[in-house]
Amino acid sequence: MNKIKNAINNLNECKAKKKELKSHPIKIYIEPTTDCNLNCIYCIPKQYRKVEEMDLKVFHSIKEQLFDSCCEVNLFLRGEPTLSKNLTEMMNICSEYSFITKIFSNMSYENDELMKKFVEKGVWLNVSFDGIEVNEKVRRGSNIALITRNIQLLMKYQKHIQNNKFHIRLAVVVSKLNVKNLINIILWAEKMGFKEIMFGCLDAAHFGNKNALTRSEAYYFQKAIEKCDEIEMRVSTPSHIGGKALKKTHNWNDFILPIDEFFPHFIEDCNPDVKKKFCPYPWLQTVFMANGDVVSCCQRKIKLGNIKPDMNFIESIWNNNNYINLRSKKKFHKCTDSTGVQCGIIKYSIWGGESRLNNIPIDTNIL
Ligand SMILES: C[S@@+](CC[C@H](N)C(=O)[O-])C[C@H]1O[C@@H](n2cnc3c(N)ncnc32)[C@H](O)[C@@H]1O
Ligand code: SF4
Image 1 (cartoon, rainbow, N blue to C red):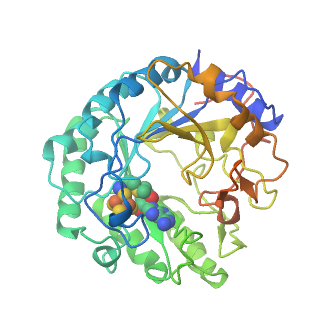
Image 2 (cartoon, rainbow, N blue to C red):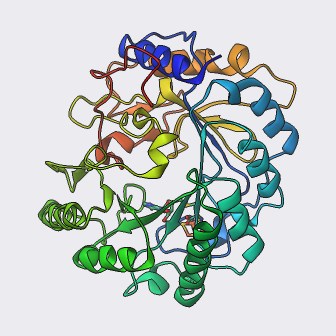
């Protein structure tokens, strides 16, 4: 199935709120491992982490069933994906397809071979980093010298290899601890050679974290966007800060980067709509956790099934009762599964809001 045709069909089925879908997911998450080398203050505490690895047979089965029709494969969820013994094989396989392969990494490890592989295989690499001032305090166990060295190495390999499908973006978790440093972080990113930066909000819904942002801090994001516009750094932010809507949440359309040749923007501009209380994720994407559990988004609250290597995903899970129940919801601000577990993503939309469903491409010539 052609991936762009599938994406257009999928967005139309989402807009029409179809419950049973003919289209396949546009976006897939595959969690290689839950293991991690750090103990970030806002992530799952180390003592509660159960280390699990994705079964390669499951990975191959997902590949056979879904890779031809999807636009993006994310090789991460919880955990540090580079600790998985199977990551290289997964990247090798993904590089045979035209979709975007995204990885998030903390970069606090020494593995020069892997750095070269990221560039050669054309990965979209998100470097998680919260700023010189706080990174080692917040991302406990991280090492700024090592992160800097790794970024320099990546830039050096890219200069040599010149793979336009390799893209590197700085991913910052913004909280009260670093919100006043956003301009410094942007300038650091520019100095290191980044052309794109993504500001995410600290998700404090589950922890009642005192470092969560409040509406007065929306100001710093507007200033950060102005700075990025000025220096032509691509930027994206959440749609709301402490409940306050930002006027501008990205500058994707303002200038072109080499990665745009491979990246249909509808992959990143169809996200939970806080105002309309609508979440498009049950239509657009599916998430495979390391233990085979299938959930609808990174919050992992709504379990939809468990994938086995010999299972037909489309027949057994994609249109099962759990997915149909989820797609039948009128509003998603109290999105719960059959056991009453609730997902809070709609309350703080960590991405740039929904701007795609009234702007669905009509032909396949849209890259
Ligand atoms: C869960 S991590 C997994 C990948 C990798 N270990 C890393 O840190 O990049 C994916 C992204 O989520 C971010 N993250 C983790 N906990 C978060 C939280 N409570 N709120 C917002 N972002 C968070 C991380 O900083 C990272 O950019
Ligand atoms: S490095 Fe990533 S997975 Fe590990 S603790 Fe930090 S945010 Fe969580």
